[in-house]
Image (cartoon, rainbow, N blue to C red; front, side, top):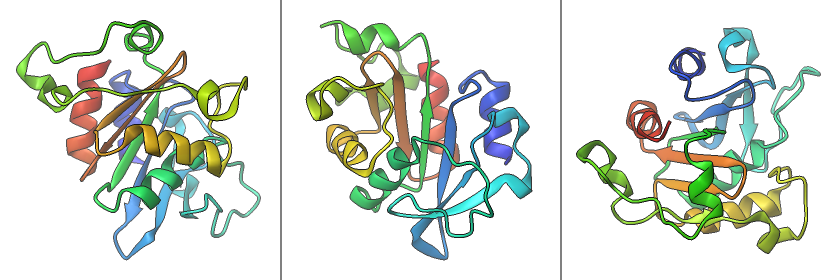
Length: 175
């Protein structure tokens, strides 16, 4: 809950962005809020998901269509403990041009090894650009590889990290 509020307060996520964290007691599950604006999340809105993106006890609450971003990255990357998906206008140009995003100062050192771009069209043809299925999530996780950030062509970005604070610091650099 606090992570959603902080990211919203710092304008890292908008009304549709989301953060998740791997469940320490069960690495095959993660926690993420139900589908709602991050600034409105309460403790009762936090849901548990398996690595196929299924809500463990959904209680009829709406879920984010793009929960597969989180599920498939956690499957592919045991080192990742937190995932943020946002729609930062500042990064959109880097996902649609041939100009790569590069490190320009020390706080962006996590970008030094490059920032891949995920183009959903190459994975699944012409779509609504939402990672709303497991296979699309797998393509995105594959594009991310071992990096900390992947840009989503015309859509936004995904940032991962070994902890919420480290990953959120990286994300705030991108906004």
